[in-house]
Length: 432
Image 1: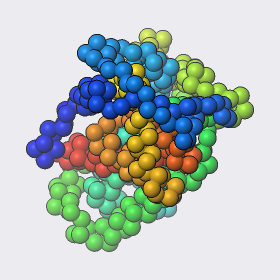
Image 2: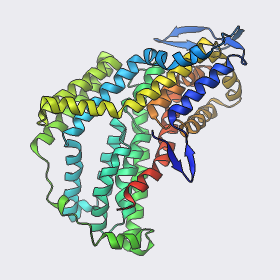
Image 3: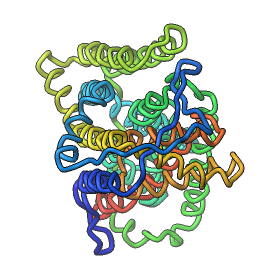
Image 4: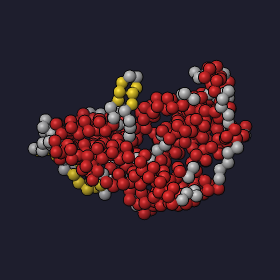
């Protein structure tokens, strides 16, 4: 989440944006009148009672409230933060074993050796990356694989764009249509007080449609380039690359036994996750414990020492610290707005604007809002922490399901996040 520059325009750091919102919300407690909805317990979750809004006296939030907001955000979102840290550490261990890299290289190696498998190279490899994007939110992690698949694509008669698109669009499509991503879907469902597997079948259907569309798009482009390489925008660059790139590393690659064991244990953990949630009603604590246990088992199976497991776990948690800070600061926004008695007034105003639409279009309006927010808050977990406390009760007022609110968040974050990731991805592989 470092400050980035796009077309000469410096984009503020995400924390700068969120803290600015905290300050603005505190100022608004002096301007916006206070308000309150009645709430009731229904089907195991707290819902807003429509037509119960009434104006109340607001509570002004000063400098002390602003400065306390991040700390109180950490406290209030402690369960979600602990979950993100533990799961991030777990994936750090699993990635340290090299099993995921080995699996993808083995698949690529098999395709490079077999003419029959080459036909299925794009669909199969993009499906693998789409699963990675859906299961653990792979996004920027595709960059090392781009440097692997560019020479493979060139060796098979394609271009660099195909080599980039296989991991990049594959993971991006999987992320946008994620059905089990703990860092986005898991957090959003938790805040919306929905069961972790709620809406699973529809999300799987969405994942299949989005992934299939991406595969067809890349496959059609690859076929055109293979027939007529000159139509490729990177034709001249690729001609130079073919002189230097070699696929010999992939041709001789084979998966080690311990890598296979890691993948088996990880797969069993995912099966246990589904069973635990559906049958035993597991929630954030149990899911975090499962991933932590899976990390220990996979680390041992992957021939990592105790110190290596610990070090890779710490590395994985470090990768999540930006998301953790965003979650805490975003929760601080909600705390200031709630303490100032203006959160329900904001909900009321939003509902009055969006209720002019049919519920179907209300869902689309929520998607547009999430899309706009993603330009400023690119972190999926941070955006969930920021918007779902408002979008979930807003869906109650609009007469649409909370699952619709989660889908609006997921698609708004996923599709625009994919577009926002294109410039840094291209800058990473372009020089090679």
